[in-house]
Structures are given as structure tokens and as C-alpha cells.
Image (cartoon, rainbow, N blue to C red; front, side, top):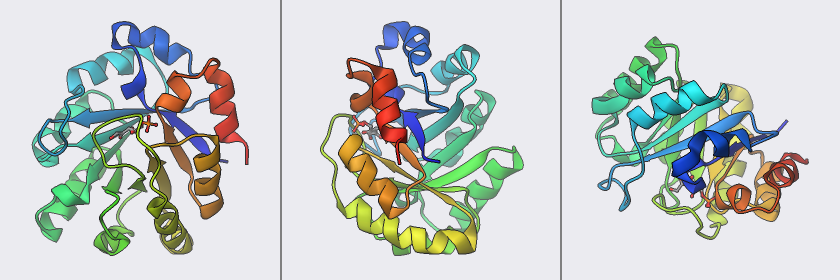
Amino acid sequence: MTKVAPSVLSADFSKLKEEIDTLEGAKWLHYDVMDGHFVPNISFGYSILANVRKATDLFLDVHLMITDPMFYVDEFIKAGADMITFHIEAMESREKTMELINHIHASNVQVGISIKPGTHVDAILPYLNDVDMILVMSVEPGFGGQSFNDIAVEKIKTLNSLKGKYGFIIEVDGGINEQTGKLCVEAGCDVLVAGSYVFKAASRRDAIASLLCE
Ligand SMILES: O=C(CO)[C@H](O)[C@H](O)COP(=O)(O)O
């Protein structure tokens, strides 16, 4: 069954708990961390994540769009992340990447690796046995409300053909709505991140339900 992970980046931050409580039908919450360096935008960090943790039992899916994930990762673990996803483009070597993956797993937190639209799937092939999730970006990371880049669909198809052998799941993020979500699910995607489509909908419950339909 497809999962929907509403992206809290599109919520009204002045009333986060009320906003999260409107997400009927979702089991995950996507939490986008931006450092103003890896991406040209700044969002929120681990202190707010700790508050979100107190406000909800949803699975906290933390997406680190930051230059130095190893430096900050313990703070996000302490704050209550259930899944921590970092970008392969932020990593300088295979050793550092494996060190980060093993460090997160040692705290019993799941690990994801993300690729930007311009990054080939080949870049993450060496880690498929070691991670729980691959996050395929269908927009350039940094901002909500952008249009879906269908280069993501081909990447999802490629990853889907490898999923059975390794056991990871596939998530897609950026420009997801009923139509683009369906394309991704048909290609083999397991988790749809949706920001503006859910938070700007007249009925958030209906928007989430429209993504859950297979
Ligand atoms: O990671 C992100 C931006 O970097 C957001 O999660 C993503 O863009 C979701 O927003 P939308 O559904 O509005 O495109």
C-alpha cells in the first residue's frame, strides 16, 4: 500500500500542531531540513523537530538537505527522527557515506539516501544493500510548489527493478499531485511526499486519500 508523507514545509509554522492534526489518512510526516548552503533556502532544524515529536505519533521522515549531515545527525536522532535521509551529493567519499549510514543505524533509526534530479541512479548503487529507502527528488531541492520533473519516473522504474533483491523502499518528493503521484506509484514508488498539494487543498483528507488510491 502506498504511503503519503505530507511535507510540513508547506504548513503554517505558527500553528504546527493544529496543522499536523489535519493530516487524516497519513502515517508519515516529511520534515525538510535546509541549511542555506546545500540548498538556497533555510527551513527548520532539530529543536523544532523535537517539538513536532511531542505533538505527533506520525513516522517522522527527516530529509537533510544540508552540507554536513554527519556533524548534525545526532541532534536529529535525539530529537526523535524515525528515518533520516541525506543527499549523496553532500558526501565526499564511500567511506564517509558508509560511516554515516552505520552511525544512524546504530541508533536504531532508519536511513535513506536521496538523489537530485541531475544525479544518476548509478551514484547510489553501491549502497542499496545498506539503506532502508531511496528518495528520488522530482524537483531541485530547496523549495515547495515546483513542477514535477518526469526524469524521476525512469529512476523509480530502475530502482523498482532492484528493490526485490535488496529490500529498500522508494520515496519521491517534489510536485506530487494525483496525476504525478499515480505515475510514480505505477513505476514502483512506495512513499509519496506531498507539500502544497495536501496543505493547499480544500480538503486535506481528500487530497491524501487521492494519493493513497492505487
Ligand atoms: O523537499 C522539498 C523541497 O526541497 C519538499 O518536500 C517538496 O518540494 C514538497 O513540496 P511540493 O509537494 O509542494 O513540491
